[in-house]
Image 1 (cartoon, rainbow, N blue to C red):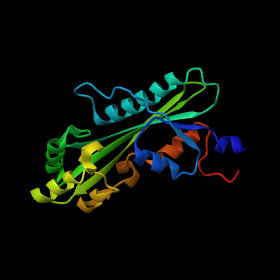
Image 2 (cartoon, rainbow, N blue to C red):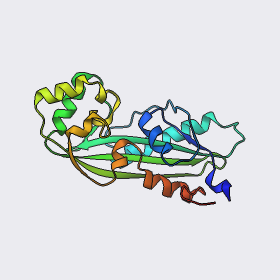
Image 3 (cartoon, rainbow, N blue to C red):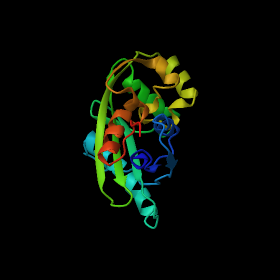
Length: 203
């Protein structure tokens, strides 16, 4: 039954963090950027934002592969940070990164990650999300400036990376750590299993 284990996975993301996470599952995968529009209307809930964008990314790759005869599952994902009902995506520049970090410091916020799996042959999809609570340390202006200067916040939702230098500014989390990095692996493995691919199997 190796066929169940070895279904082709296409990751609709150029994020190095998501690539590292999916590689840790020890399943073969390939990368195809979605190049999908990531704008969403004002007023959408965090759950709707991340689930819609994850599916939009996966379906954008599906359209690119319409003539592909091979079987496979396309995986899309999207992450946002929410504090006081403000949705924080990636910072526009260093000043924006400093603004976001100032909003987050000394308090808890929520990280939402949406995951979408689309069957390449049938077009059938599954979409879900996870939420993790993150408590950030109280930071001085100098610490915020130094972290921004490191360059790490540049392409991160909420302007920090929990698995990098940002680990020094996070006090604790409640929930799935990998959700904060950008791909909740436990959720993804359940979704893949529902679509006919078991990550954990000895066959």
